[in-house]
Image (cartoon, rainbow, N blue to C red; front, side, top):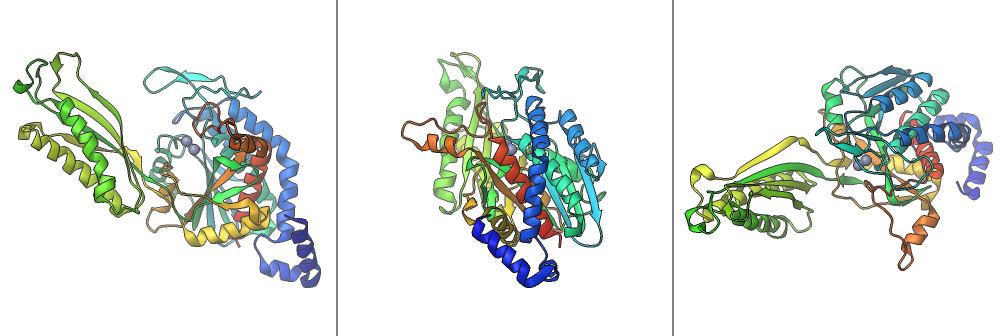
Length: 449
Ligand SMILES: [Zn+2]
Ligand SMILES: [Zn+2]
């Protein structure tokens, strides 16, 4: 907080007295100062926790140690902890009298990426992936920062019990990177076996935002992801006799290009759509015309309407191109929607965003709370807001790059910033963790009034 604001807060305190401040409720200047002191007090323990998590990352569905470590932290803060909810999920509940219920979520998993940051606490972990291949593992998406922040919040909220009322539910969600965990926890009774939330809150590190700042998007922030397989079927023949078959390679090529007209010709131009054919496989040998080509697509949209139109167009185009090539009816393409690898958009509730962002401004000062642009990336956090009756959710972004590193990246010819999921991505822990814990604690105190 700038000095002038602190002085104004102190003056207000003198003028109004403690009773008025209590009636005002929420994240008062006094509470914010108290939160700041609590964060300082526990910072070195949190950093140790963070480096331990960073050194020992675990892949999606294998977050056994990470979940246990988080559960231990939450238990020692005084929460009632249940483990193994939807796989390695952790649910911790702290009841503090009548009132609303707030759920705060961290994800737990890491990625099959080789760390190249050279940090003293870098990961050398290796494991086998689901296909049995040896892979390096790294927290390249910052979920270790998220877990650490949640541990910090749990201690603060337990200590600040006289400043809030209601119920706090903290969860460690597994398998975010494969967009499974949110669904698995909901299926396992997250909203029925435990207090049902009135709001859900989460944060995610931002690989382009300065540490010490937070960012927000009101409304759609992350996209619907639909995973679709298209199997183009033809009629095999000799490579020198294309007239004797129906070449699925040529049909697939035409289909790929035609799919790009969905965005440019069929959907309202101000509505974002991405149709990416990420994998094409067909054929065995240069002189054989294959009988099928398998394509894997990722489809990104925001609204239900655009999503529906885009998926319908993929079906129609795949079939239409096959028809125009003269493929017989029994060899029409097969379009498969993979529900398991799809996830809905994250829609940040505008009223909740306004309320929480106002608290962030009190904690960090106006210039450190910045509006960010929505992206077509994915998160399964959005699912928590879609269970009927729907609850407002908000995922904000936590700056994680030092000011010096950011400045260096902006110089002509400067070293570009690595993106999330890069083996070079390394958050600056000191400011990032402090900011994450302080903002999230203040938001929780403010919502639970
Ligand atoms: Zn990620
Ligand atoms: Zn992530």
